[in-house]
Image (cartoon, rainbow, N blue to C red; front, side, top):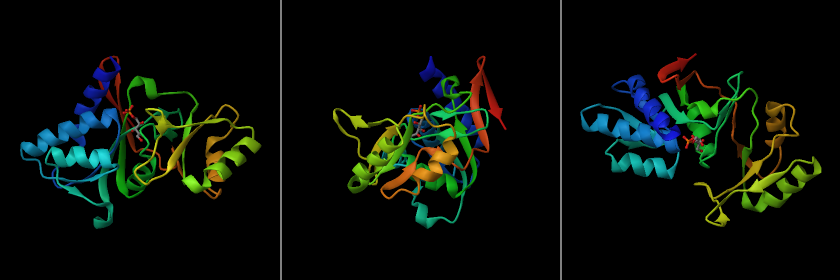
Length: 221
Ligand code: 5RP
C-alpha cells in the first residue's frame, strides 16, 4: 500500500517538471519511482538536465539516459524533488533515512524551489526522530562522548552487519530525540561539534509537499 502510494505520488510529481529545467533528483525509494518517470519522459523527448543527490541516483539517472550534470557546473537548480522521513506541522523536515543527507541538503540549498514527496506515514505532529547525524570517522568517538554527556542515546547505522558508509566516506549515528525539547536548537549545537559533518534536520524547509490524501494527490503549500 505504502509502495503504491509512493509510486502514485512520484508519478504525479512529473507534472512539476518543465522543459529546460535543471532538476535536482533526490534519493530513496519514493524518488526512485520519480526518476523512473523522468527517465521515461526524457525518452519521449523531454529536455532537462539533472543533478543527483547520491551515487545511486546518479547511476539510475545515467542508466535511464537522463542528462546528468555536477553540482559545481550549475549556478542554480530550478527545482529539487526528493523524499523525506518526517515532516511536522511547522514543515520542519528530517531526511537521511537513505544516508544521502549531506548531498541532499547541499542540492536543496542551491535550488529555487524544493518539492518533497511524502506518503501519509511521513506526517507527524512533532519530529520524533531518529535524527541522522553524519560524522567523520576520526571524530566519531568525540561526538559519541558529547552525546553521552548530554544523556542522548544513538545507534550506529549499519548495513548488512557492517557500518553504513556515506557517499562522502562518513558514518551515520541515528540520534534519539526523546530528550531533545527543541530540535532546531539541538542541531545548531550539534553542528558546532568537531566531527559532525551534517544532520538530517533540513533548515531549508520545502516550498511544497506532494502527498496522497484519501486516494487523491494533494499539494501542500
Ligand atoms: C535519503 C532520504 C530519503 O529521501 C528519505 O529517507 C525517504 O526515503 P523513502 O522515499 O525511501 O521513504 O532522505 O537520504
